[in-house]
Every structure is written in C-alpha cells, then in structure tokens.
Length: 396
Image (cartoon, rainbow, N blue to C red):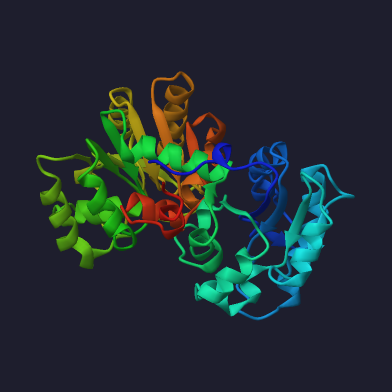
C-alpha cells in the first residue's frame, strides 16, 4: 500500500497528531502506559524535523459533552515522564479555537501540547465538516498514528485528513506495513488461524479469508459449530447450532480455494474450571456431558506442521479456553511455535485482536511475533477486507 509517511513531511511545521490515548484506568490512575509509549516514535520523528506538536485523542465515551472525569488532563502526570519533558509539556483545555493557537505560539521547535478530549465535541463522531476545519485551523500538517480508531469516519480520524496534508505516524506505518505483508501482498503459502467463541461475529472475516489464504485453521468455540455442522457429536459444548448451515456454506466455498483445518481430536471436561478433570479423545469419543474446551495434541501437531510449511501466518482468536489451565495447552503450543519460527526469520507472523493479544501474552511470546496489533475492531475490519476511512485518507 502506498501512503504518505512522516519522512516526506516538511520541516518546522505545526503538526496535529491523532494518537490513541484511550488508556485503561483503575481507581483514577492509569494502569498501563503502553499506548502512550506507542506514540513516542512519531513524536520523536516530528521533533527531529523541528515540528511543534499537538497530540489529539479521545478518551471514553462522553457523547459530545464535556465530562470532567473523562478529561485527558488526568493522563498528563504519566505522559510527561514518557516524553521526558515534564516541565515543557503543556495541556490545553480544548482541541479547537484560540486556546490551541495561543499554546502553539508558546512552543519552540519540538515542543509538545496535549489537547483536551476530542469527543467532548459532538462534531467529532458526526464527522462534521466545520468541526474538522476548526481542528485543522491552527496546523500545517496532520499525522494519524491511531490505527485503532482508523475504522471510524470521525472528524479527527478522517475529516481533517481531507483538509490538511496527511501523513501516517510511525505506529500506523508499522501496522499498515505488517498487515500488507500478511494479507495485501503476502509471501505464500499463507496460513490463517481464527478462533474464539462465535462464528456469527466473524462471518465476514471467514468469508474474506477463504478467498485469500492457502490454509485456514479454525479453533475455539467456533470450531465446535463447524464440527456440529458436519454431523459430529459435540456433547454439551459451546456452539451456535443455528449457524450450522452457514458453516456448511463456508466449508463448501473453501473447497478448491483454501484448505480448512478443523480439530481432529479434542480435550473435554464436564465443567469449565481450573484443574477440572479432563481427557483427550477423538471426535467420536465426545460424551453427552462433555464440553470441548481445547484442541487435542494431534490437532496441534498438524497445525505446527502447517506453520512449518507456510511463509506467512495471520492469527485472530485462541484455540481453546486459554484463560483456564489446562485448556491453554493448544494455544500455548501454537503461539510458542509461531514465535520461534518468526524469531528465526522463517515465518512472517502477524496477530491481533483483544483475546489474541491476551493469549500471546499468556504464552509469553508477544515480543517474538513479527507484529502484534492491539487495534481490536480496526484489525478485524481490515481482516474482513473492509476499507478503513482513516487509512484511505492517507493514501497517495
């Protein structure tokens, strides 16, 4: 994909930078500064160009009203140390108007201001043209570094990009380059892993992937639905039985295009709790009271072999109830194998989605994958083949 990058931006400009600072909070304090640190490469790149930088973000869902407890001012104590500029970091209690202009005029080259929650204005989520113009009014360029919000056609993610010269931030750049490598123009063969609970929530994803992948492994609760659709007895397992016809249609559509890898053995238990008595069985051995909670060792062996034979892997969703041992075994084994191949340069391994990130962290391998997206909805919509407004606006 061809999009405008910071390296191509002019020097010594006023830059409006859309970031993702919708950080987790606990007892009035930020509990994780990952999203703050993710913005640092973009900020440093712009500082090297002598830019005056205003950081723009949303926080929570104030629905177009000023809600004090949703002010971005509360992250200022954490943002200062991340930027190593506690004394020089300014906060502006709005994101448009004269207060922004005044703050920018006080900045020297490389200076940074944090603007107030953009969602305090109803024009943000409405993608109001006049509000987008107000956001752009004090700036020379716009930089989008918030891929996680790129699937929203809001004023700060899409509208302003049609008013100012628009560039991808460094985190956005990494995300787009990784996804292009996984689904745009991937090295083949390409293997996909899709897990999670429900077929219904990933229907568009599955339809898109079977047209683009060489192999697709299906795990988690959604695999139970496919097994049920094939006439397998799944006992008391989680499944969407009303989606059986849809599952059969996906199986039929994949024939001759994409090899589907469904479980060939499973781990079952009568209850979903840590340390529950469990056993491994073939697909014909699931009892009436059994719940399928993980993929079995034969299934895992086949999946690892598929990874060995692939050049690219794209992964969304765990293979079992990974939060509860021992039902994390298949997900852990697959994650560790993928990470080892990626670290050795033998596999491009791209993963994303909330449960997927948690599962990779649980396995302790997030840092060894080629790329792990924390973008959630935007990552899924990209995998579904949908155009993302915030990305489309950055294309050359």
